[in-house]
Amino acid sequence: MAISGEGKVAIVTGASSGIGYATALALADAGFQLAVGARRQDKLEGLVQAIEQSTGARPFAAALDVTDVSSVESFIEGVLQHYQTVHVLVNNAGKALGIDNIDENADETDWELMLDTNVLGLLRMTKRLVPHLVASGAGHIINIGSIAGHEAYAGGGVYCASKFAVRAITGALRQELLGKPIRITSIDPGMVETEFSVVRYHGDNDKAAQVYEGVRPLTAEDVADCILFAATRKAHVNIDEMIVKTIDQA
Ligand code: NDP
Image 1 (cartoon, protein in one colour):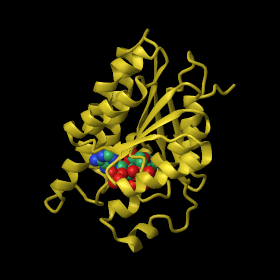
Image 2 (cartoon, rainbow, N blue to C red; image 1 turned 90 degrees about the vertical axis):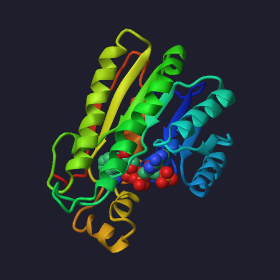
Image 3 (tube, rainbow, N blue to C red; image 1 turned 30 degrees about the vertical axis):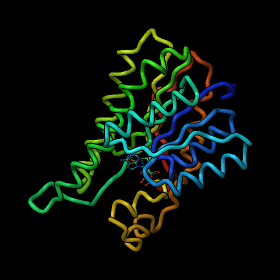
């Protein structure tokens, strides 16, 4: 049975596009009060308007760069000032960059940015929010991993490493926080059609489109459905991990 989000506050990082955007909308429609962050303010404003149109409630939205400690801290301060509490943290902000073998041609700047965003960014948010999530009495951390966190592939070693790390962090947190009123979930999608591939190929739309040739990828809404499902179980029910893929992907 689904539990309503009424009275609960949910943060979604990387809410300016793709899975984060769809998740914020889905959670808002289920009654959660939203706090959304990303670097692109114009896209966030579009989301604010979409949520307002759909629910009548205006979400908290502010600039957030998870690679920047002061941005993380001022975002969280803003959320707490606005709502005084927070129940759900969806650690969604993330990226893949390049298709690089780990050889002398690989771009180390891409490596650093991926690890900084996908791993350290998630840790920066989590560390600062755990006390508030626990204090809410019904906390929930939902980390967006990937099937790349289950099986490595050639040309994606560093992205895969970042998502293996997300899985490790999720597992460790679940043990560290055992007995406290907080749930820890990992949602691990396969191929989803978002801006992800455009970012991966540094803005090359043609290359990005080729990624989905011959397959019907998941949509961001398909993944948002899974996140919503996990977030709306009864307080004692923890969905540890959900792997979701298109039927066209082995
Ligand atoms: P998008 O590129 O559409 O979305 C990525 C989001 O992350 C954007 O909103 C972007 O916002 C945000 N972001 C990137 N860097 C930062 C940063 N430094 N600080 C704050 N926000 C940031 O891709 P997806 O929706 O597909 O990706 C969402 C998550 O899903 C990622 O963690 C990705 O690894 C994971 N995933 C995606 C899959 C796919 O096939 N698409 C498959 C499996 C997992 P902005 O640029 O405005 O800051």
